[in-house]
Length: 176
Image (cartoon, rainbow, N blue to C red; front, side, top):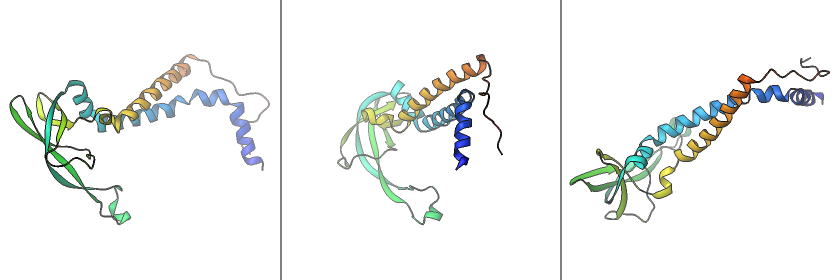
């Protein structure tokens, strides 16, 4: 079976040339992960950096339908009911209320006291403070994006300031 062996030989012979362009997929994945982290974590990051902490109380639960599959017509599943907590807290003498966008553990119920992280300039922008769970799902995506961005920037500089590598002589680069 000569088919994969020819491609493997070509790839080994042109390793430097291939790695020269490896920064492009790294950069693409870094941009995609950064976009995901921004869209899912911009409010959370704002609250973590500039938010104030206080205690709030769960006053009820709001029923929402959660779709695990975005195309519910093809899957045939109608979705799953989830109950998101509605939390009330006092900020600067004003009673504020918000609906938490993340699920709560099964042990919490109506009347339970929960830590709240809120924006002092707009108390309706708030979330339940869950320590390291505040960083999910956007935190790991952002960390991976930063690492890939650093690797791709290094690859970009090598691409811009290094001479073109030549293929190894004696190995054909064309296909038959």
